[in-house]
Image 1 (cartoon, rainbow, N blue to C red):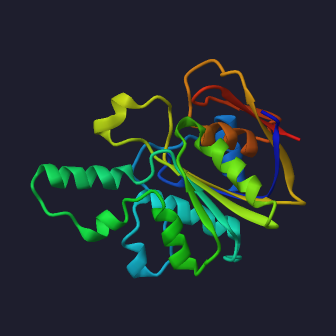
Image 2 (cartoon, rainbow, N blue to C red):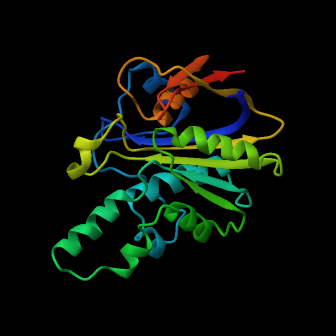
Image 3 (cartoon, rainbow, N blue to C red):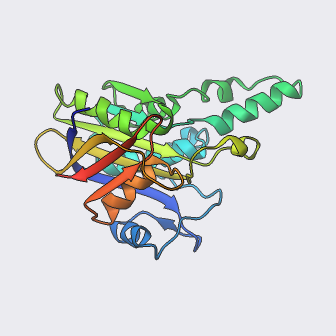
Length: 243
């Protein structure tokens, strides 16, 4: 595969921190990348005061993570085409629906409508008034790489594209099937055609060690000002390089 080049004009990320706070500033993410600040394994989610309260009550934690970083990276420009990606999407909401079915309970129409993979994309469009094209992607371990490739294709027609990645650990019932390490976090990249920090993405050999979510591998290099990151994929690894 020929390397795919892209430029990051601005980025934003959010995750809960072990000190009951959050990791969201560039300095905090640099500390996390250096190993001096840790993500927390809890149910915390970002506050979204910029979202209408009625709509905010409908958001899952995954959607909250996605909208938090999307708004920060967009910085007020809600006319951008978007690519939303998550490996498992609204699996926690889906698991709740399956539990209701198993118990013979009627399904909530609202929960059902918000269990689809493009939930965050649709909610962002409603909340921000963004009517530009939007794509929702799930591609297993390759989710972030495929989203970057999709976004670079959109840059052939648009000056800027907003890419949003959000993930969280699987529900307890499904964790025995997990094949990579992850955490609850959101990452948004504002990609630009002609300016920003240049990166390249290329297929590579699978890295050694336990597979980790691609978003975490890339975020560690991005926030830590590292020259490269390597991440696992379904059939081969990926190499992320500052150009």
